[in-house]
Length: 264
Image (tube, rainbow, N blue to C red):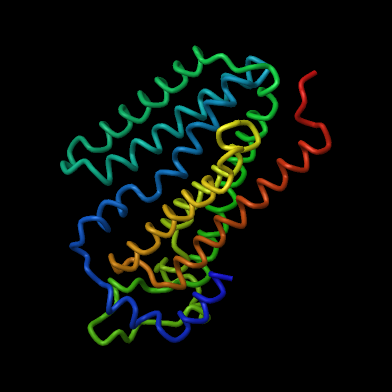
């Protein structure tokens, strides 16, 4: 309902809202421009490390470990682009830092003891987390290609390149709609899986949602302030993420109800 209301409002106020809010020098918005996508990277790293810990066959564990290191390198390059100022060593430092981070995570998981009754639930959560990330990223990037919408910060002084959200432009090379930052931030909604395996989160089930909602909404608002997206962009990006997570949560719930996640 929030997304529907936002899309209706955006049909009339997308451009005016960005004009009113635009402040590329805002410190908080710049910070979230650098860090807003980290929930997605966190899911990829934690889920692949969990698979390397819990999969039963050695070759599967090795494959998951290699995937975790690959995700770490991907994360390291992301951090390098956002925080390393010198271009000369940025790529190399990002690769080394990311690979080191992933290897440290894998080593730490080696020393974590997981009770037998949680092994299947956590394994299922890891697979769902990876699937949700893949679905969200695929849908967002597909829509970006189909819509080809120009970002607010790339518009000319007269805003002649602006198009409404309901007007797809095809593959123009512009990728404003929908917001990838907001979609990646929305991977924090996977916190809603925690009440299934944690007594603390079971007692604070609503907190899992509200933490993710507040974080994703904050990232979405800063994208408008930065001139990177419009209200409609962030509304759809967040909705895609939330919908993918809800499907993942329902899938887990269904498997649990059918007894598929019980120990042998």
